[in-house]
Length: 473
View 1 (cartoon, one colour):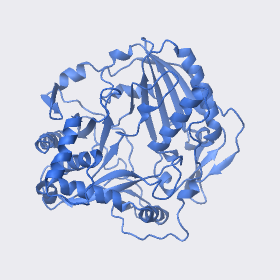
View 2: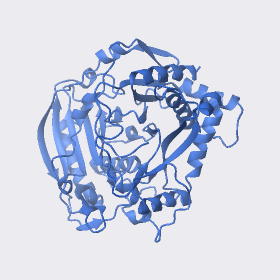
View 3: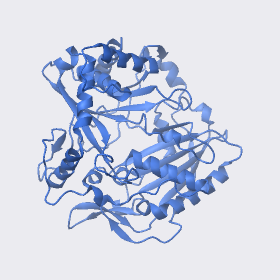
View 4: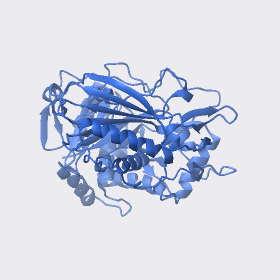
């Protein structure tokens, strides 16, 4: 089950590991890959300042939906740029600061702080103009020296300034941007935001607006900040069963450490690359097998089905064919509830698919694709509103064996800044065995390939890897 727990897990890279295959075509020694990765980027912070809205904004408390309420943790992304002679670092810094100040007028909550309303016991956004934070740093390395940007290097943590855990929650900035230069003239923009204020889609919209303002252009999209659009109904109407949600009994707090905290050194970490040929092969395989018209054979659905099968059958030490495995994956509900595409809060819920391990092992891939498809179709507007109402009545969180978190098609690397598009964009990864991440490839190399990031105990990883290639054949 997935419950709240955000303690970072440190990964032991297995020195004993032999070659591991990325997809069906590529084989690369893990030692060779790791030897090219510098984990200490030797970043020195030179300046930290507050950025305030360029115009006075209204002081107000902003409502947070039940989806926002359970996402009080930071999400950090890094966006890498090659050197552009027309935009030296000083110009980039000036343009970013100015653009952020302008953006904070329409994104006034980003300059605010999170606070707990003691009467309602709900989090709210205090739009008090306290400011976002801008950090300037410098690495001793060139961008080309730090290794494969697709590989989620633990050193990338140095490129994003974290919120300050030693501060009271109402004093922590909700948006922190760090500009880190490399010796070659390339640079990284690290963005840290509290997940309670936005999902990946709305962060991309914010970055598009930031890039547009940095180019002295108007906003690309005017954000919709009305979070009451996702308020629960009064009275709440829970119209469906929600096995994908775990109710926490009243008076019971979350365990510390949480059930998913794994001691240092107990997880192996690998990236499995699925080429465009691999994905086409999985699609064709699903079409050739006994096929249901309910199955929507898309790139994401076949990859999710394949990963689900491997994760379910590698789980634990003893295989139990009757054990039920549940995979969770995000679905955008904006169109389902008639929200504007520019809705700036969290408008993503967890869809799910469940099956016994025996069915997952023996059934055709097309059946798993069908179940993933049905999970997405289940998320109608009525179902999504029922989930929101469930959160009004219950204290709880998504509940499943693991979550597939896809950054594959978010398009962060498509954002056009004055100095060009990012060479690569990625989240700063904290390895958890209950989350499998899907990453795109480097811009310009392939838009159809996906990197599957997996962190598991050694024995489970060995089984996962064997199954990954077995079911890909």
